Amino acid sequence: MALALKEAEHALRLSPPNPSVGAVIVRDGRVIARGFTQQVGGPHAEIMALRAAAAAGESVEGATVYVTLEPCSHYGRTPPCAKALIEAKVGRVVAALGDPNPQVCGRGLAMLEAAGIPTRSGVLADAAQAMNAGFLSRMTRGLPWVRMKTAVTLDGRTALADGRSKWITGEAARADGQYWRARAGAVVTGIGTVLADDPQMNVRLPDQVRQPLRVVVDAHYRMPPEAAMLHTPGGAVIVAGAALETEEARARTEALRRAGADILTLPDRVDSSRVDLRALLIELAAREVNDVHLEAGARLSGAFLNAGLVDELIVYQAPCLFGEGAGPAAVEPPASPGLAHRWHVVSLETIGKDIRIICRRN
Ligand code: AOF
Ligand code: ZN
Image 1: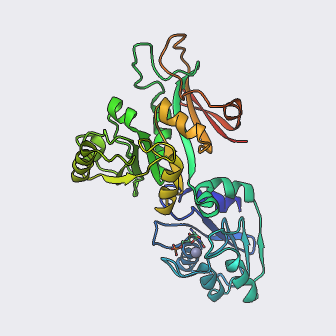
Image 2: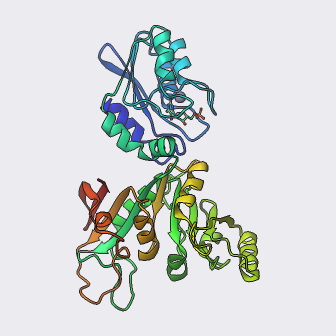
Image 3: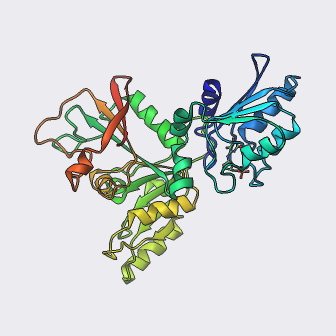
């Protein structure tokens, strides 16, 4: 199963909105084939492993299949893996985790059992869960998994006193940030960041085949139609704004549409000139976004935190000190002490000359 999890890692940037699954086929104590989930619409991990076995001239009859998610039982974009495993006459199926997709939800393992193939589930479940936190979140909560990324100094600052902020962290940390972006279904930022930095918010890795949606939270539709995001290759651009009934707002949204943006109107429950961030996440989940990569300034990051919508923090910390009076912290103040203290560290690593801390919610 550990090998199957390793295999699944190859799918992280490729498979969304499908979960990233790995499969390994073992016969007489020997690994005879491996596979991982392909791009959406393409074969699942088990099918790739069965094909690899066939290509290598290996028989899978009676073999054990280790797979990091319950084999599917439904006709989605592809036919059911459980059926393919039954037809291939495998001997046993071991899964790390049940598939909470309501179209599967135990039926994959039940199909195998009904065909006389013994199954087991729950092997290395924690690692499998962590790897597909986004897919599991969308299936069980109807919300994407939200990772908030920030880059700060040792004293938690995002800019010098004069506002200069470019490249706090080094090249290695920035490349690592690209990998996290690359596994997301959507990169979310705020209009403040667009106006200050004019970012592209795309994935610039040479072997990347899919691009996450690019979402700008922009209550008043202030995004310039000339913004780089609208004129660089990458995922579709969504401008998420409020229900403004003014002539100017209508003219601005029209200009943005002409520049290629998709306008999403999400009025806040208490204030029609603000964006309801939970409604935004529900809408993104409906568009099959598993993972949101939040890469924004202190204001929007703080708003997501204070709405209790952030699941994970990725903090890059550079070994420098900007000191008292320097630019802003990564986020606006938490609305309550409970929100400030809700995190625990799950990983701490050096990335080039910087450090990366990953925290999850308690
Ligand atoms: C598997 N193995 O490698 C993956 C599975 O539309 P489809 O046919 O591609 O089905 C997508 C669903 O299949 C997805 O929502 C999830 O429940 C399951 N993903 N299942 O047996 C895999 N990626
Ligand atoms: Zn499948």
